[in-house]
Image 1 (tube, rainbow, N blue to C red):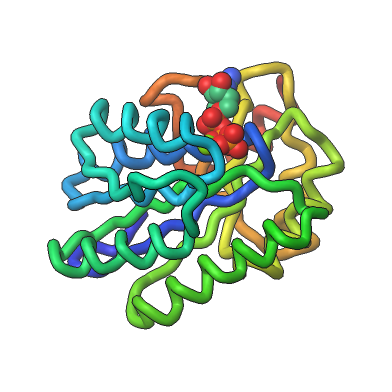
Image 2: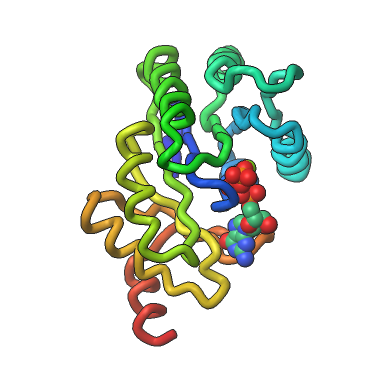
Length: 210
Ligand SMILES: Nc1nc2c(ncn2[C@@H]2O[C@H](COP(=O)(O)OP(=O)(O)OP(=O)(O)O)[C@@H](O)[C@H]2O)c(=O)[nH]1
Ligand SMILES: [Mg+2]
C-alpha cells in the first residue's frame, strides 16, 4: 500500500498487452476507496488510443488524468507535468501508465530510463514503487523481461496479471527468487475489482492445488 500523507509514485512498466493500463485503473479504484488522493499520468504517448483508454479508467474511478494533448510527445515530459500537478495538489498516489515495450528494443528502454530519471530528479523525496507488470500466461520469457526492465526502471516489485486463466504463474517464483523482486499484486480478471494484494501463502496453495 502507498504511505499515507506522503507522495507515492507508482510506475508501471512491461511489454505490450501485459495489463499495465488495466492495472492502473484497478489501483486507482483501490487507492480512491482506501482514501488516498490519486492522480494518473498518461505517459503512454505511443498510441493515441492509449491516452483515451487510461482516461476511461480515470472517469470510472474519479481520478484526474494528466496527459499531453499532442501526439507522439515525450513521455518523460508528461511525467514531469504530472509530478508538478501532484505536488501542487498534495496528491498522495501518482500512478504512471507507460507504453508497452519489448525488452530488446534499446531505444524504448532508454526512454524508460529517462522516465525513471525524471521521477528521481523531480521528486527525490517521493516513495517510488517501480512495478513490472508481468503476464502470467507468458512463462519463462518473463524472467528475461524482468532482468532488462529491472535495469532500466530500477524495479521494486512485480504485478502478476491474468491469473484468472489457466496460467499458474510459476515464473513469478523464479522472478522473485532470482531478481529478489517481491510480487505486490495479482490481477485475476478484467474488472475493476479484480486485483488483490499478493499473499504468498494463498499463491502457493493455488499452485499446489489448482
Ligand atoms: N483475463 C485477464 N485479462 C486481463 C487482466 N489484466 C488485463 N487484462 C486484459 O489484457 C488486455 C491488455 O490489457 P491492457 O491493460 O491494455 O495492457 P497494457 O499493458 O496497458 O497494454 P499496452 O499499453 O498496449 O502495452 C486487455 O484486454 C485487458 O482487459 C487480467 O488480470 N486478467
Ligand atoms: Mg496500456
